[in-house]
Image (tube, rainbow, N blue to C red; front, side, top):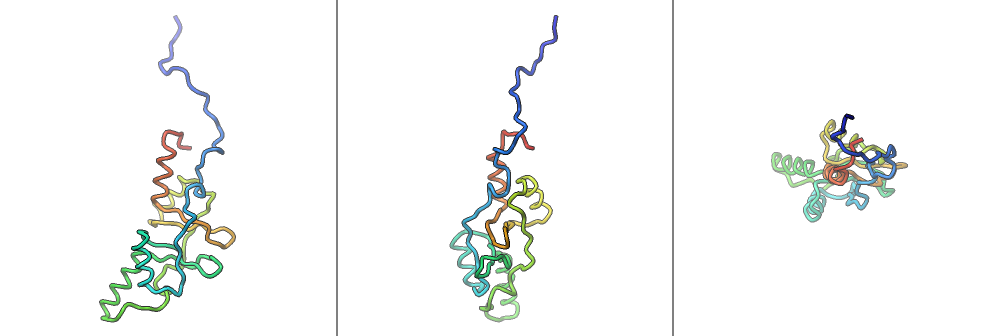
Length: 155
C-alpha cells in the first residue's frame, strides 16, 4: 500500500515575477499636485483642503524637487504666528518646507518601500528620475498594492 498525499496536485509555480507589477513605479501617483516656492502658506492650506491631500512636493520651474510641504508644516506656521501674535507669514514656502527630502527609486520593490515607510516614519516619498520629479508613492498606495497583490506569493 502506497503513501497517499493529502495535499493533492499542485500547479507548477512560475519562477519569473517579471509580469507581476511589484515595483514602486507600478503604483506611484504621477498626476501630482505640486507647489511652487513663491506660494504662501495660506495658498498651500487652501489647496490641501480643496484637494483633500496631506502635503505635496515643492518644485522649481524645471520640475526639479526642492522640498516637501505638509499639513504639519502649515500647522506649525499657524501655531508660531499665534504664539508671537503676528499675522501668518505671507512670504514664500522656503522657510516652512522640508528641504532635505528623502526620495526612493521607482524600481524599488513595493515591499522594500513599505519597510522604508516604517523606518523613516514618512507619509510619502517622491520619485525623481534624471533630476526631475516623476511621481510620488504614499502609504495609501502601498496599501492598495498589497490588496492587489494578495493571493499571490509574497516574494
